[in-house]
Length: 106
Image (tube, rainbow, N blue to C red):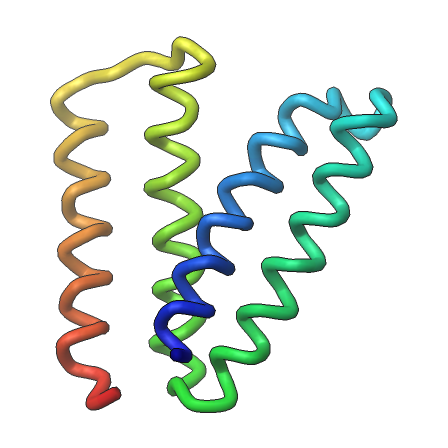
């Protein structure tokens, strides 16, 4: 269950990062409220997952899901640049996440 909570927390991190970009520095009310709600939800779920998971593993996986998710979101929905170096770098993050999961013992 902790891994599911952590995965959802990571997805919410992607959501609040996208909302933060859309809020234009918290100058747009709707995206600003969305950002705050999803950020709080992400932190709460991360805290719940950390009850069972090691700190370093949980935090690294949470930020990794957020980083790779925001990377993909930016390319797909915001027209950000895609290059071989960026793809390889994102794949290295994913490999690290898988390694942390496999070695966590949970």
